[in-house]
Amino acid sequence: MPPRAWIATALQWARTLALTTLFLALGRVLDAALNATDTTGGLILGAVAGAVAVICSGIAASVPPRLRAVEELRWRGSGIRAALNRDPAGTATGAARGASRVASRPPAPSHAGAAHGRAGGGRPAGRAGGGRPGMGEADLLTGGVERIAEYRAEFLGPALAAFTAPALVLLMLGSFVDPIIAVVLLVLVLLVPLLVRFFLKRFRGPTAAYRRLAGAATAKFQEVLRSLGGLVLLGAEDAGRRSVAEAAAALRVQAVALLRRSQLMILVNDALFSLVMITSAVGLALWRFQDGAITAGDFLAVVLLTTLLYEPIDKLGRSFYVAMAGRTQQGLFTQTLSTPGEATSRTPAETAAESPAQSPAQPLAQFPARTSAQTTELLRLEDLGVDRGGERVLRGVTLSVTRGAAIAVVGPSGAGKSTLAQVLQGLIPHATGELLLEGRPADSTALQQAAVTVAQKPFIFSGTVAENLRLARPEATDDQLWEVLTQARLDAEIAAKPRGLATQVGEDGGALSGGQIRRLAIARALLSGAKLLILDEPTADLDRRAERLVDETLRGLAGDHTLILIAHRLATTRWADQVLVLEAGEPAALGNPEELLAQSGYYAQATAGEGEDR
Ligand SMILES: Nc1ncnc2c1ncn2[C@@H]1O[C@H](COP(=O)(O)OP(=O)(O)OP(=O)(O)O)[C@@H](O)[C@H]1O
Image (cartoon, rainbow, N blue to C red):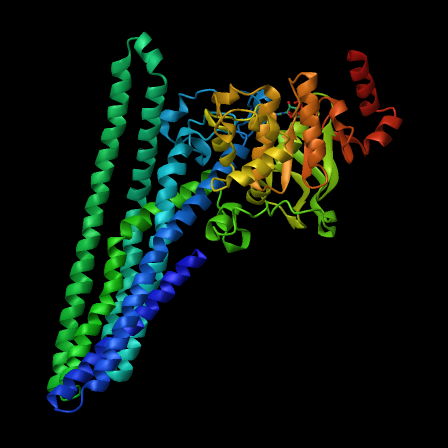
């Protein structure tokens, strides 16, 4: 549960306590009036309790909308980062080798998978390639994230209150009015968790089916829109229209089924908890009153307090649909993208959103000045081996990466450089050996959160420079954008454009040069706050001038940032702290560039070869 949801729960408890006091006070006032004694004490207590209840209600109502915004930012930011970081082809078995790098080819439309919303392996189908979120993921990142945020912000807190606040009421009822009535009502209240479990089970299947069909319908619609030109040329518009209509019809049927179940839930809730609870309470109170066990004021208090028992349950019943939709989306999101950590691993988005006053002037906290702490080890690879397509393509890799180090990975084609990069991003598993992140065995989620890749052909969408940067951190201020542009040595070129950060760049960076796109992608990676930057041949296909600029940028980052540089051109690795030479899937050498140049291995030979090429 998000930490702020606890605040809503605590406020709900305070409100329940205040209302309980108010109702008990009203009972005392009635008794005092009937006995013609002084009512002032009861009235004052009631007034104070009523005021506290109103204040608590007001504050409690303001928490969920704000928490919802925070959760939306957190989940969407994490999902976008996961989508941008992931190599779609690398996870597919037997995929073409050239397609195995992150975004190593331009995004290509996918038609086949999109129609089904989700494909094997639990990933949404229809991925547009190159790390760009696919259509199923687009649905998850928009509507899906809204459902998750709604569930986490508006359901979890009230749900906890609904299960616990009645205990407060019953405790006070038992202590101040009549323990027998309290015990009987307790039995009725205890039926609630059983019923909720029953309904959760019954709803899970239909809700998941509904979300799947909704994703498929969205994907189908987008697919038809995208291929409209082709469909018109082929005279096949009707086929496109029919396929969208079929997806929409299937969705409608599922939506009606879901609504039917939802109505049933509301009916049962109303019948059981409103009607049964109130009539039981009145009957019990009447019986105890006739026996002389309680007074008329107690009778009034019992009836009023019973409304408090079913009020949270009533609210819970009405937002049951929110819970089912949110839980389903959260499950899909976790399977296909990532899960933002809770308070222990807060994303920059969350941190900034939760303390907006600090965020504008805040330096990018994840890139503090170099301190002694940064000399500690960020990554350790021990005798690492990786299998692909049933073969061991990487073996015996041992490497220690300290914070702030720049490690170049070089080697002939097919040596395993990209494979190693993908393992470090958590995209493919290692088969043998150990991979430790900050001293702990690293799973794919931890690696995906820690590392960000700057691909050879980074994904740039049609929008402004600022929008492209904010993909990594939606709430970043303009100052923070300029800060990373400065670090990426792109600030002067963007500032020179008449519209600055609002400069429009075309799809795949049409309005920017190749070198500017790389530096924009580097700036975006810096903005993401990842601990490890993996650069996949950052200077490939650039002319010498652009290569020099990107090279200078990376050189400037070294020391303050931990870099893994996959490089073909060895001239761009001369400033690296360490160079790992891979040959035929095995480490052939490891050392600083000067040491390796002094030896007669691959590094010295290939560097000499580059000199001759010039
Ligand atoms: N998706 C895949 N499925 C099966 N084998 C793969 C896959 N991707 C790469 N390989 C194999 O793994 C080995 C290492 O490939 P990798 O792409 O890591 O090399 P590389 O050093 O990055 O090569 P290059 O410099 O040409 O990009 C090669 O034998 C390659 O055929």
